[in-house]
Image (tube, rainbow, N blue to C red; front, side, top):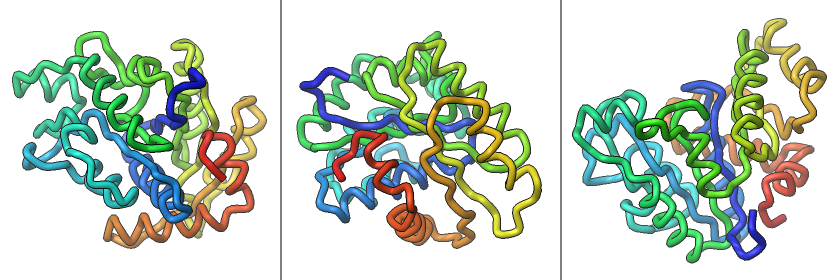
Length: 243
């Protein structure tokens, strides 16, 4: 990242539903609680019932960061259909222009001292034509924080995500294994060690499963968990956040 740019991180997932919004929001809240002027962005969100307002993910990020930035900056593209952005945009006759995302990001970055951007789906999710989430991360010149689940299949999904990042010449700050159940089975329990033995990318934390159904309460709980992690300072340093 160029030295004159606002530091930040691009949060991506190994799959849909791995908890990347919760992790991104908890990081935003943790930094906000520590007095950091953190900005958030969910460049494209699909499955938004009322596209005149922020979707659930964008609104949660804004709440966690304590910001009141324009919704058209936080989420420039809000789409109704709950499918991949490129498909939703085509269905709704919306043309996604990547340069507009860069412009919105630059505006937010100028207002804040640290930026958290959450992608849609995984790195190979199509945004517009041949433009993927990985291309957006490279366009914004941000390193990645990969969020992965802990259960069966996560080793394959995580290694494939890291391979995709390398093929797109993206820097990976590290990965978090999210949602470790209390009654972890062998697949859950062995995932952190197995992944650590198969990649040189740093594991930045393992977070427990949170069952509270309220999204904000989940973020509050996860924020406290991240703040109490023995690896907290290592995590913040890895993602370039102020300590």
